[in-house]
Structure formats: structure tokens, C-alpha cells
Image 1 (cartoon, rainbow, N blue to C red):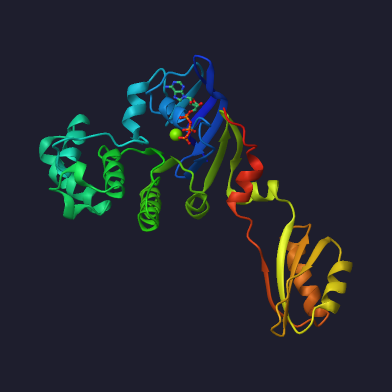
Image 2: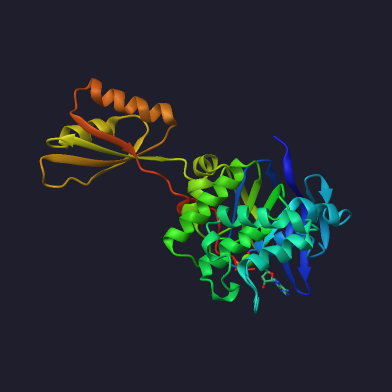
Length: 316
Ligand SMILES: Nc1ncnc2c1ncn2[C@@H]1O[C@H](COP(=O)(O)OP(=O)(O)OP(=O)(O)O)[C@@H](O)[C@H]1O
Ligand SMILES: [Mg+2]
């Protein structure tokens, strides 16, 4: 795997504040990378350095092999950037807005109408082409902004909170759009506070806090590192006393909690150490011992608990 975004020892200081502190991070080509961290962690600052809008105080960053400090023009050609604010566009229609950005990227006038039609269709705004930009809802503006980042068909998308402030449906639509863009071969690097989105679509995650990378990897790896124990919920027909004794004596089992409801079934919550095989062997052992297991499932360790463990609540 090649790193299409490669950040090495990046530092950005504003007078007294160190917003990004010796950050090293790499994004694999073709991935959907979720960049998460508390408010003020340095996400926007990192993105502004990557998009050549800010000069780093120290360190280096490369996009598609181009240095953000030595080849900023090449970097700008290969990236599409969606900032965390939309701006005001008085007196501009939706299609004029895209036409304006296409012109900025030197796309010939005759090529623009079909391009704009494609972009509007992609973000589902074809029916609003002649509406005023300022009259769009927030979700529509965000989709329009995403369309704008695609005008020059960039390889890498750098999106600063593309789904913030959206309703659940609009959020899911943005999420699907990001997956679609990755399917078109683009690399998506985006910041977000919506961990459910990260869990759903990201192939890579980086957690930043106080300007430093706390963790990077795929979600499963992070979960394993941070939450080494497993939680299994077992439903049995009938009483649970014998099963509880069995589980307490079973190697690796640390806690057994009885959460039975009075419905002829028992429900046990088991915390145990071990890998996937150990979980599977526990089920086999219970079946072999003829316990009437109805249901056996591992509780998912969600990204929220990973995030809470990885970050310490430091505010930069
Ligand atoms: N122009 C600026 N001048 C001075 N300090 C700044 C400037 N921009 C950002 N900072 C500071 O740099 C730090 C990192 O800010 P940044 O906007 O990068 O965080 P963020 O991770 O994007 O946060 P959020 O989740 O709230 O968007 C903060 O302490 C912030 O106050
Ligand atoms: Mg930000």
C-alpha cells in the first residue's frame, strides 16, 4: 500500500498555541480515512497545511508525492478541499456557482455544462440548478460544496466535517456519497465528530488530541488494543444456575452477570479474555455440555468507547 498523504513531524504554531505538534500520519491510497479528535485538537489546521493554505512551522507533508511547501501548485491540482464553512454567495445560482469554480480550474467553457450536469446529478441537486445558492438548506449547501470540490476530478478529497449539522437522512446521504467517491478511485480524508459514520464507512482511522496523533489504524485493531477483553451475551432456555457455575469455572472468564428476565429464559453477560477462537470454543464447550443455548453473541465494542479510552480530555 502506498501513502497518498504522508505527514512527517508536522508542527504548526500560532504565537503561543501549538495547534499541531510533531504529527506523523499517513493515508493509504484509495482509503476512506476518518480523522477524529476533540474540538481544538488540530484537525482543521492539519487540513489547511495539506491544502497549502497554511505554512507549517516545522516538518513536511506530501500529497500524491508532492511537497505542500515546495510544490504547492501540484498539490492543489490533485486535491479537492471542502472547508468547514460554506461562505456567502450573494446573487449566484447553483449552476453559476459550479461554473465559477470550473472556470477557476481552467475547464473550457464548452466542457462545463455537461460537467455541471454530472456533478449536480451526483449530489442529487439537478432539480435546484437554477435556485439561488443562499436559498439552499444547509444540507444542500454541503452537497453543493462537495460537488465543487470535484470539478477538476481530483485524486484526493480533503473534507473538513462534511456531515456536521445535518439531519440523519442528509448525513447518511453524505456518507453514501463518500463511499461512492471512494468507489470511483478517490482517496477520502475527512474530519468528523460523528463516530457512527466512521465506524460505518472508514477503512482507516486516526485519532488526534492536542495536536498529536494518539492512534492510527483500522477500527478492529484499535478496538483490540484498547479493549482487550470480550463481552459475550448468552441466552439459555430455562434457569441459569448450572450455566453460571460452568462459566465461573471456565478458563478466561472473568465476570458473569445474570441479566435474566422472567420469561422462561436466562440471559448471562460474560466478560472474558481471549481471541476469536477462545470465544468460539466457549460456545462449543457449552453446547458439548448440553446447555440449551438459544443465542450467543458478542457485544460490539463501539468506536465511542475506543475514542473515550484513547483521548484523555486534554484541551490544547
Ligand atoms: N488562526 C488561528 N490563530 C490562533 N490560533 C488558532 C488559529 N486557528 C486555530 N487555532 C488554535 O489551534 C488549535 C487547533 O485548532 P483547529 O481548528 O485545528 O482544531 P480542530 O481539531 O479542527 O477543532 P474542531 O473540532 O473544533 O473543528 C486550537 O487551540 C485553536 O484555538
Ligand atoms: Mg475543525
